[in-house]
Length: 353
Image (cartoon, rainbow, N blue to C red; front, side):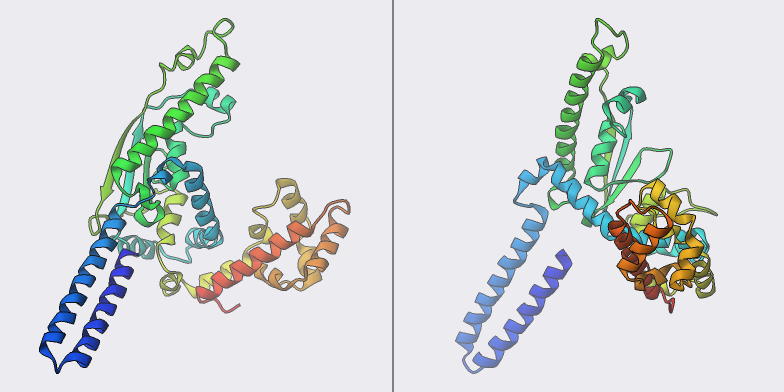
């Protein structure tokens, strides 16, 4: 975004100088006066753009982690279907291994943030009881937009553009971590005292007194052109990390490396299950039992053909086949919407369907 602003300003600057030259070329004094004014204004604007890029005004956003998390979820939802399809295409070999490496290498000119955590150690059973899914520090990183790089290691990454402007400096990112982890520790401490009081439980004493809470971390900021991703033979990155990389690439670039024959086979053999992943397990299971009947009823050749099925007709058929008491409207809308999104993505990849 910074480069975009600077290009716009540079373009306006050149235009302004040309206009000044045209209208005042006969009067050297006037020409010099307006040229000087224009040049100074341009310099001030460029300085202000640079300054506010590096020093965002609304520092209050540092403490609003719930707002940051909401933006993160919205961004993930936006790319969800694209990532789902591309992840499957990679597994199916539609996008070859050596092409994945090219994708990784093509994004070396990116500014990224890396965090490595160690030693939190809140007992797993206590976390589950507290209804926490991950260790406190890790949960904070995931909320603000970091993804785990390797499955068995606590290395997390975030691209600069995916972090709020207020967190694009290490000192501000660390400040947020300190604020939020103290809040979580206080909540776990209070929960432990209430749920596992010392007079009844010997376990969790360190977390009743807050003595057991700890974490270590390293924060890195890799500058542009100093960030490289590579692997030999096969990569061991998490799907979330691969998806975050793919998200950085325009899908039009991936189009040129997709194997069209394998892509066509993938579309032909893929079950409608891919459209049901967001549905409750019992609903999904019951629909899958009638996949063949649904395809015959609506003349479905491949799973994306559900995009053209009228909602009411799909409602009625699901009610007839599965459960008359169920309200199928939302489920039908989800199935049709997903089919439409997948159809669009596959078309962009060069699949004429």
